[in-house]
Image 1 (cartoon, rainbow, N blue to C red):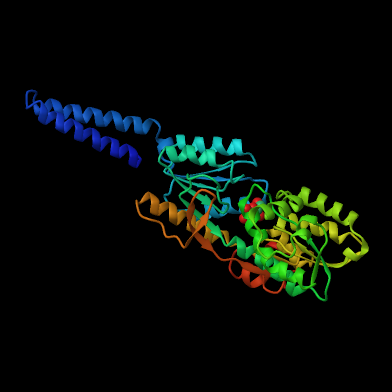
Image 2: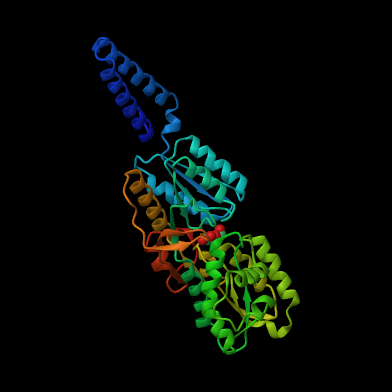
Length: 395
Ligand code: BGC
């Protein structure tokens, strides 16, 4: 079947219009038959060029994800594939493998394939600006996916989970599951190049700060957080200072090294029963492994997010306390619904907006669910997100 992109069809229509007016202009000097033949020949040539690079003109939605090295994004790829299975949307998914240069290259590849909508989760929120500006120049609509692309006008829409709620839920879990006062609190954060890391920490701080002020917790591993502990609302700069000190860079190995350093430096009054704010599942598992081997740590409550399979097993085994389940099926559906509306020339539905430093980006936001050993079966197995057979010891 010959597939013509909307741009190509518009080009053909406008050419036909030009020829028709030319036809009127030359006042029938040449015969109508010759002109009709000319039109047919030009249209045929256009269609042939369309066919020549038909594989190029077929891709209407390009999807760029940050890395295949983290289960979270492989999960998103799979959910996109599941959602697209049996539909006739033409899409291509590319991974940036943690590199903003590769990300820009991916966007350029997709531009050359004639995409009309770009769904992109940036590796680095600021650095991705150049890539999406290149896409915008070609008239492509840009949807920022999960992570916001910052400090550029070249973002049209944002589909996201409620990231402030993610951090707040993690912190609330710690508050609800510790006993006594002066509980040592270990803070960890995501990568400073990811706007979400700020939102997660801001959400967590809004719940933790009053509990630090009332003596429930004492901060164990961050002088920057300690110096700001009386401030309920932190500026972006202040958040940046704490994050800079306790960042995992979203790398499990960085998280492990930091946790080891912190425990080596900690006096015994910073051990015993402790609370740990871990930003996501990958980092939570490595931090939990380190705390689990320190004999002076008698128990710990530790957070996570993403409902990664390995962390669900950790939760079943009592090695991680909770995760925040972000149902990627919903995010993928929101992103694809948005893309299809745009392709159809309609306005996508949005529920709010996010300031990216340059503009308020219209956004569609999805809620999150707290999962621990008590509701893991209901939320993840009964909802058919995972199969029971993928885990051992699930009751
Ligand atoms: C995502 C998390 C993910 C983290 C590390 C964040 O932007 O929202 O789900 O765990 O990046 O990739």
